Length: 113
Image (cartoon, rainbow, N blue to C red):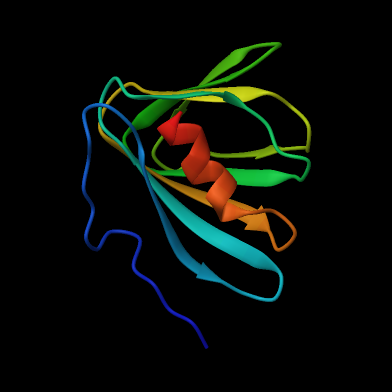
């Protein structure tokens, strides 16, 4: 059994999102992204499907086709190889679920370049 708390030890950075791997299982990787109002995750993509859940706050979730305004409680599923970006419209906590085949380090690299 593995446990984590999505709201514990939250910290924000005015220059970039803060990515924390909560835990990995045999089938998923659970990641928390804390985004201060105005911070951006530049356009990126992965070969695998992802699920994004807004736990607190709100974000603009953009794809090549459209931008969706997501608020607390909203979920969005995205197929692999779809370029997307995120911008926090207020301080936000996001849960990202990756498949076991994806790499959580990739998510951190998006925020650091």
